[in-house]
Image 1 (cartoon, rainbow, N blue to C red):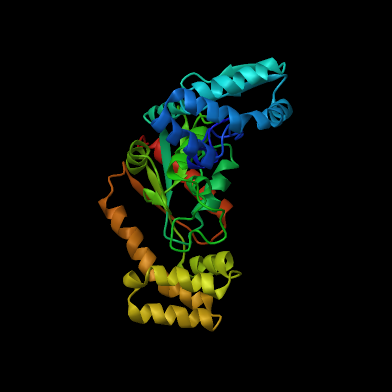
Image 2 (spheres, rainbow, N blue to C red):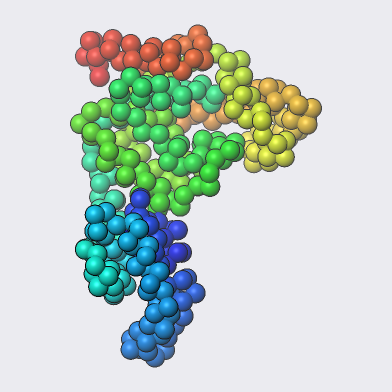
Length: 328
């Protein structure tokens, strides 16, 4: 039970935590003002006025969400808010514990955990190559995968937010990333997509990004028109206004003529032509950072089809061949 205010919870929380705020955002702000002007005793008195009518509701929620009558409570530092709520639950017959150090201690643990040496393997390829589908196809063979785009709720391009849930805050993305990584075995390889450090509005932590940059990369080469058709399938059902807005976000990079041609193609229902025009930009954008990166090795994997299971097998065959040669 996270007893911090809704605004604190939305900024970042422990994955799986339930927000049971002792105070609303407005109440917390009011108490803070009273504390500064009149001191602790006055602030506590005001807090009691706010909290007392809510006590029965707090207990009801805690009872419904306890595990065998046990519950873990935390606030920011594991101080007065969690202490008061924990005592309330104890009085109601629950076995209540307080998270030592609160959410602050959890955040420190999250950031420290990213320094672990994860054994990443990277799936690269131009936009529309089906990297996410290949990643999950590899996962179905028993390999470990980490889907960064799923955690970020974004596909990593100007079109990447289309059809996705709202993005988490960068802080919550880190919390979710920590939660996903702790379920994996860091001594075994973990497959990820080749992402830039920013995925929409969230960022891969520096230490993890550095590990990914220096990891072996398997770059699939999928025929251009297959990539076009994949992207048409992925985005063709969305309204013209949303697609046009995505094109306009990369207008400076596309150039005036290509932008207008892409917008005209959307208006005429020719999304394939829009994709072709924007892919010329995305392919150049992908090639440049590739030339700057210092992977242990970029292995090109020629793919004749867009089938993710076939292409996943091609990558895994390449891994076995390179392992036999002693490269990776």
